[in-house]
Image (cartoon, rainbow, N blue to C red; front, side, top):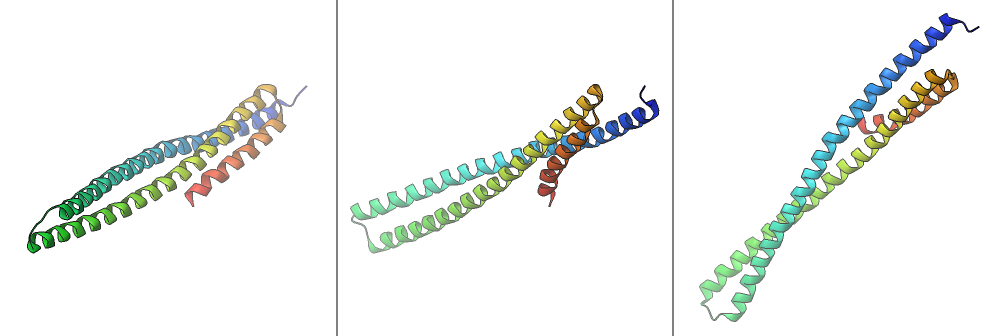
Length: 160
């Protein structure tokens, strides 16, 4: 006959650790959702800036073609050259914004990847904890703690 006091203590310990693991999994899940939203926003910004840069560059090229084919005064040519220079500078600034937005999106992608991995391990640990109580196998609970530790590592890796 099993010692019920020891069994109850073990089941209480499993319940507490499982609740703690569930809280970590929930936090990781919420962070994944938030970081995914920011990642998509930055990717959309990169696309927007790229489209604006393409428009500026096309206008620059159109002015250049126009200046080559028109017989215009020196003053008009000077104004076109100045407008082209402004367009070129605007295009360069937009290209920098594209690069910055793409880099930010990549950072958030890496964060969401690590947090997703953390969530998977933490949810697996919860399942193993539940199985350990149902099957009354303490080694499954210990294994669930190891799996939760791996998930916790990925979780903490993103907090640092």
